[in-house]
Image 1: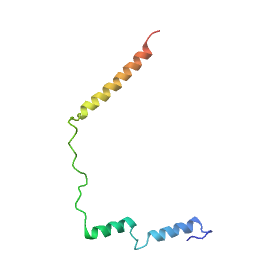
Image 2: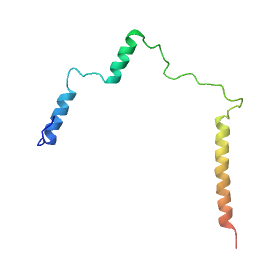
Image 3: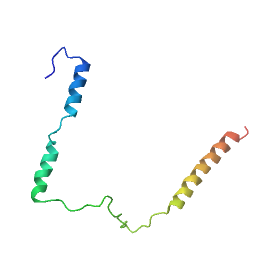
Image 4: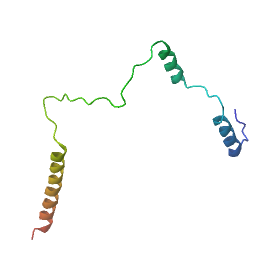
Length: 89
């Protein structure tokens, strides 16, 4: 336990000393997994699972269709705002 009068420099030294220790105790989760996997090791798991192509009977839009819808919507909003600001009174 650090003393009340311990300044930051001494504490920094203590942290560097602790970080440079040769042996570090594993975390509780690491110990739990090691004990579990000792008798029942996990199987291989792919980094990224295969995509699930089952969609509820609906085809997904291709990326160019989505891009066209977004750009069309932006153009419509710009034209609408321009029309509202351009109307003579």
